[in-house]
Length: 121
Image (cartoon, rainbow, N blue to C red; front, side):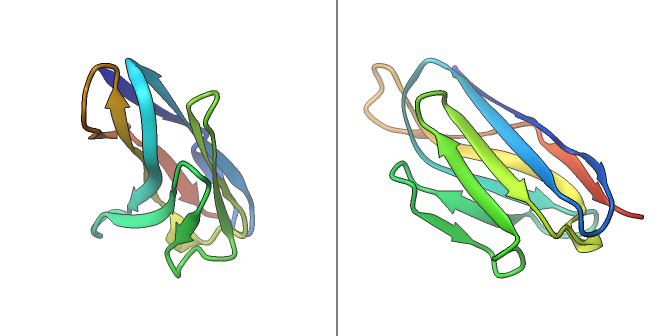
């Protein structure tokens, strides 16, 4: 069993910064691609950023240049540094990871429960 738990959400003023973290725990053999997604009220789930095990990253156009995704493979942690936050960044943010558990030949996709980010003055 694998669990993903996000932390770091909250209320921030426009132009401010927040750092989200995601802890992956359980019977972890190997963590493959990891990513952050978000869902704003009344909108579709959208990809924010992804990172490969080797550290290659990709971002949605809406956050490029403002958000930075990173990971600590030794600690099984995923991060999202958000700066220059805008009201349209308000959403629930979800951690996602492809995890190969011990003894399993293939990876399964897991989600965290989400953390709320509100950007408002």
